[in-house]
Image 1 (cartoon, rainbow, N blue to C red):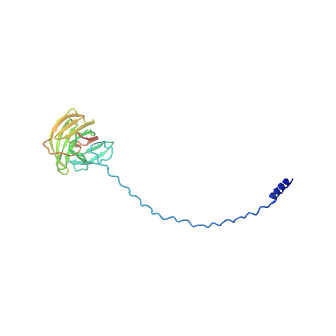
Image 2: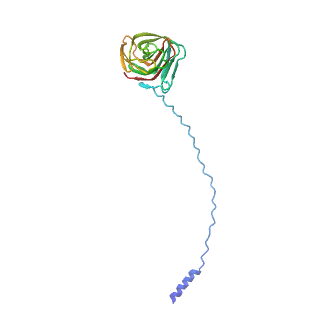
Image 3: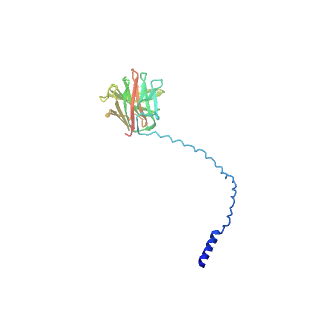
Length: 246
């Protein structure tokens, strides 16, 4: 019985005791801090863009005339008019509107001693004319010029400037060949300049070797040639030219 009363007293005391009031702390006022200043930074100067180095002109290549004529030089003899030269439909077009005119497209970026040239062309206007290749061109010493006529003839000339626009041509050899196609047909010619010998090709066939040891031309530029006779216009259309090692 005593244990029960003590237990009740303890229980009653626990239930009736009023808890002490809880001290409520008022909210602390938060001081507004000024924003942290951001240190000034120096805006970097724009970096200069370096211009790409110009692409060097190749030495051996095939030009299909599908872009500009960069690297090529146009020369003319026998006529003071502005040369009519253009690239159209992936071809080089040399047009002569006056009789006895010579047009040259020389690759001025390189000089060659021994070299092989090849080109494909068509006589678009059907007028009798010469179409050719040039090697060892020197403005002061002259050049070798291999020409093929759509009339079935060919020749090799030693050309040399007498004055601006006036050239002298010394025949070295001439001949005829059944390998030459008719006017209006697509044809190919080739020329190898090696040592003291020129080798002449028509539509893939070697037609002649020519001794040039008497001429003191050892190196120079290469290129294409076309010339008119009495009948004009002459339109020489070159599809491509290949410059390679012999």
